[in-house]
Length: 479
Image (cartoon, rainbow, N blue to C red):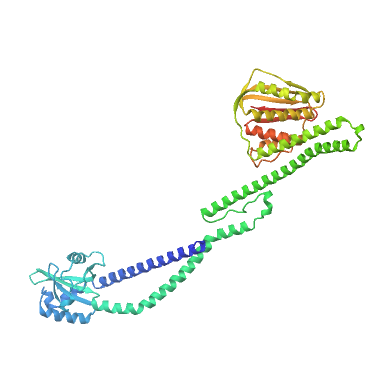
């Protein structure tokens, strides 16, 4: 009973049966009402005529043994009538029936007055032979020769004998009428149900067909249902919601495809970065091992050592990047002196810069106090300075300056190295535009700049880069 089909079938069948039962009762009532009105209208003067043709009634007599015989003769001519005389208070006086037949001794005078005043028919009056039962009637006033009102001649239209014959007829016809009613009820229910089901489920059927025809393999170009569906508001809302879900699914697929491609490109760059120092390390060690001891040179060991250090640095950065991607690094803010931090970094990188014959110029300004995570800030600047030293040729310059702005401070790291190409800047800016999350695409610029980007996002720092090939780079960190 949880399916749409069964619920619709039950609902429509119940509604049809209820409608037919209501219609049946209304028709029965309408037929009875019309029949009573017609019969009472046709016999409205019946009591008056009976009173006129009978001498005793015409004289205003309401109680006499001879009246019973007169009533008997009149009722033989009209078996469906029951005749009574009433006093002025409505009490039953004379009638042609056994004593035990009379169940009510008083007739409602209000209904008699309504009839005599020509109120709208049908008017139902008291049936002396039935308890709490009313029937249509005809009534006439009985007036004696002196003009005194002595009572009423009260005629029930459709008496006990008519009721008995109608009961017999109804009992014989009831099975047939009931069977016909059941047959047409079931036929109507099935017909209406079929029409309702076809009407209501047609938009759903079209929606299901369109969903089954969607090419899931075409997620890259976007998915959408072809048309709007004519039907209920719920079906239209459902189609709109499905289109929204399909759009989100397509966007997520495109994002995943982009991330997959970025990771693939990143792994290619990373494998190259790892392969270069590893090849150098193994190459110089192999040369050392295959060269006679007297011909070995100490600089080979130095080069192999530097390659090993480079390999170690890359692996350390890779582990750090993995920790950032998994959300395992959280900032812990504290108040620090930026000048003190820059001075410490200048001393740390001085030997490396001297070896590569690159000049460091960390310009000190008035002491600037900032709220940051010292460790994360040091790693950002260390990666930028290390990257600048490695890409700046001998005789080059690397300077760090702190500039004030209306929104805070701008820390700029400049170098006079090889600079970055247009496609590298594009990759950097595209990756920067994405929000920092586990699903962010890996950059194509190496592990160091990837760490810089994600650490800056973790500290809510904006980072920009300007560069020209052969003229150097400038990284701007907005604190």
